[in-house]
Image (tube, rainbow over all chains, first blue to last red; front, top):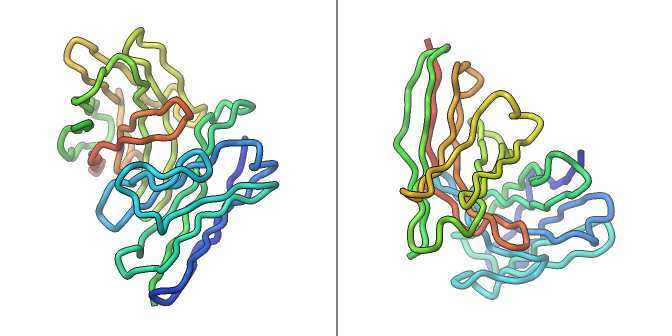
Length: 109
Length: 118
């Protein structure tokens, strides 16, 4: 089955830029979606189709995808951005069609 | 407002059966696939399966095939996840989700916590 690899944790100071990566074999050929999950809450879609934002998601959240790595970038990080972030793809070659990365804990210092 | 509202938390004993629900509103329930995602305590997200309420076409992750049953009643805009014999390892938060045309999950239910303990 297809595997998505994320770093367990990323730390960033307020006002700086956080980059969370998601690695997968030729992931650049797939559409990557990103979710934010704050403690005790359901996940929220923050980026879909590599780089699009749902309505209501700040422009500070952006995404890119090329080669074997997709990246979620959060600019001008705020304390309220502290959360777990998950990448996700749909893999047609596997029975595990919807695949999630292991998640990255973003800590705002 | 588009939303998915799930049934409340459950506490069950091993071997018991359970059916949890997910009611959609604010959109055409029969036009979107509804999936289920498991999150074990302190762990990540796992896709379990998905159903198209329009015709009840259902797909399962191999990890959950035979372990759970997904169904839907389109007359009341509700999807279900059920177990015939719970195990302690089924203890988790379960989310229902709406699938988009590009295979993202754009709407999430609030989650149903299932605790299985003797």
